[in-house]
Image (cartoon, rainbow, N blue to C red; front, side, top):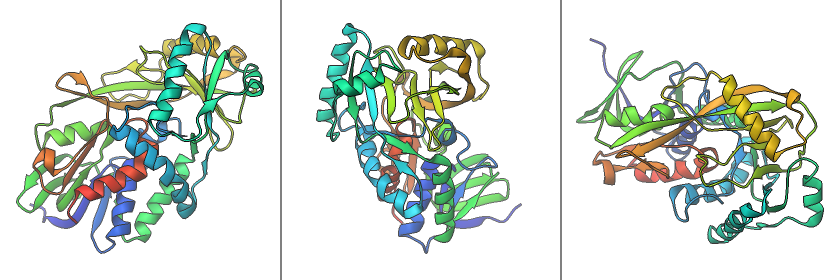
Length: 367
């Protein structure tokens, strides 16, 4: 029987959420023996590396929900964090437009919600701005959200890794945790390198968080995976700000929209496709449906210059059979487990919210 290794803190998941928690813990408590466990060979290789890389404003989320509060705080924290960790964070802003008169009411609602959610500086687009946008999108009316922007995600992942190691923390790649269980001294993890006993456990396992949590307590959750595909574009397009269509009520996301990365590469996406398993294959029929939507919203796009790029899977969840609309972040109060924090359903705006989420999580632990 393998000898049990004892540590202070175990963090399941080496995506942006797990790394941010690891950074915050090692920053505040450098004396603790803290480990981040990543099942794959690369950090941030799942949800983190397969999204739009957008710095969200907090506009879309229910007031005072965790998504709203942590996104709003995280949006501010990223600016300081970017300077500290040498990560590119650029506030390019975002236009949200409607094409048809019957969509104007929804755009009005978003403008009002921006005020309700304390999003600074949201305003109606000027005639000059709309004229410029009309060369690229079917714009009838638009609002501008100045606090939106982009984050260099690969740079953020590598910078957080470096900071954790410099703070005395540990990161174990290619180290799948096959089982978690309660122990009188904390939690027992079955790993590739043998059993590990940790005093505190943060379940930040992304697409696998629900299954880990169910090994420890009856959380009532089930996974609801939604794939999102992206198309890259080699043609000329607007690169001053993002351009989003006004989200329609039936959508599971924000609709297919245009973004760009720090190098200026244009992409369109993501769409929404219900899936029952974690598979990063791209369905050609799904891409054709995306092209139809792109042609409707962005008539200037040359279809032959669109090509498959990548896809990601949103880690949505259901609680007792019903879609759970918020982040699921539960500590001892809900789980009755001391020094255990569970993060599930950590989809958009998880990247933006992550610095605030990490502080929130640390406050739920007794370290």
